[in-house]
Image 1: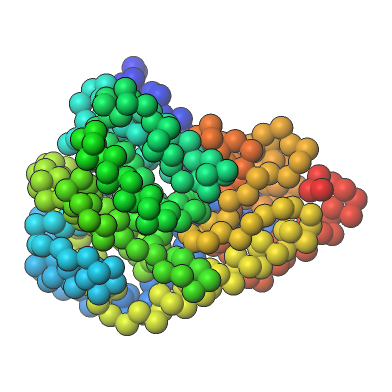
Image 2: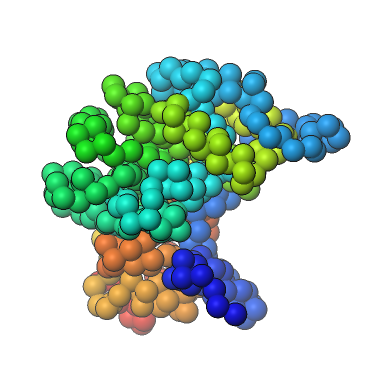
Length: 392
Ligand SMILES: Cc1ncc(COP(=O)(O)O)c(C=O)c1O
């Protein structure tokens, strides 16, 4: 069998490799501390599950949805205005089967073969895979610690900028956890207008911002809707991860073209999921606040705990991740991650799996309860007395 070049180039996602490792540990009856995949371990709020449950038992909700429910669109308009101060029209919104769906497909409507797409490095993998599947060329924009992980738009040459059709940007950022200042977005819009580039802003973590701060929306900046769209997922904010619901919002021409493409790809979001999304964004928001508190406490326990072992981690300002350089003494992030798995059953993600710019770093997802985080740290503490791990 000869597969297409476009899929033959796809390496097996790191998460399936880690899943296999996890299975091996479980088969050996070892305790697993899974800080790998960013799947929330916190369920959706009870009122969201109840809404979905009531919708699921109604036979009429099992037909093809085809389109977004008008009440869903109304709810999104109300939510964006209340939460982000952004006014949206009905034709500036479409639901997606998760932002992954949007990121996988948006290049199909914006880029032709060998058009350039600008993506962050390190970056969430689908940022590059989506454009590559559309035949576009990827140009990587380094996220450097010395620039606080903010893309340096001045470093993009005019030649590259003229060839580019899309720039994919995402703050708060996975994996590096950085938040971008307003001036960055203002400059981004200026840059996009100057070179006629579409901005795709992935806003998956606007709700998971810590230390009393609040995340915002790209669309609140003047001119944003002229140059781009934002994806806003309910996976991490409302823990509707498996339901697969997110939105593309902004430039109406892009939304229209995406609707047209998607009408050929799928038949809309399952109606009970649409109803659950309405319950999430219009219902009580106290559960969301407690979700943020939970992640913040886990962040503190994890970072303080690992630092007490001699690692030198910073507390992330946002997201459900910790991003840290690997301790001294390891030649690669993969080597370090494999050692953590083999010795302690601790699963983390090597930074290199997010691109060359991630080498030397590791990502830990805050998806374990505090007691388990403490247990993982105590486990290393006990063993490293015999200096089995080179933390210092
Ligand atoms: C930056 C980023 N974008 C998109 C996604 C996927 O979101 P969704 O579940 O809406 O497909 C994730 C999931 O981890 C993510 O980290």
